[in-house]
Amino acid sequence: MTIRKIKYELEAKLKSKDGGLFSKPSGKIERKSYENSGERFKISFRNLKKHKNALAIVSADGTEIAQVLIQNGAGLLDSETFNPNDFPELNVGQVIDVHIGGNLILSGKLYED
Image 1 (cartoon, rainbow, N blue to C red):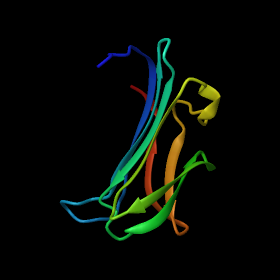
Image 2: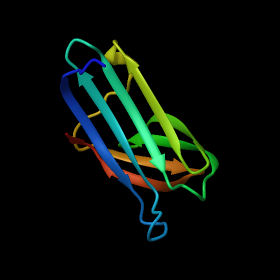
Image 3: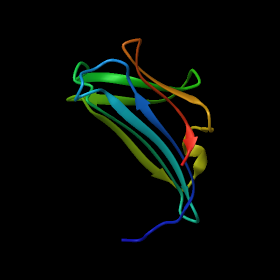
Image 4: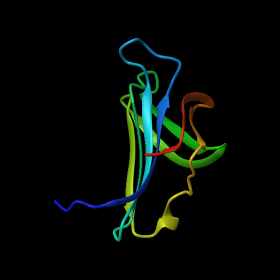
């Protein structure tokens, strides 16, 4: 396995005000840039039991950046590229929201990790 050195990483922990004590819906969005070896864009969700088979719309400051299929309460989008223009531009401080069926499900703010 090759270890890649991270040039920069943006991340947001996505949280919800709804959900049970032990299975609160949550998620994470990451955008990593590696020195000399491309970029990675990853969005993951878990404990979305109320939304077993739905489409989640992910937005940054109100602009849609991705759609993720929720199956069995979880969702994942994980992509890598050598062309940084293949992924949406993200910046520290942007608010990431996740809507399902027009309802806000998760939210968080991007920070540099």
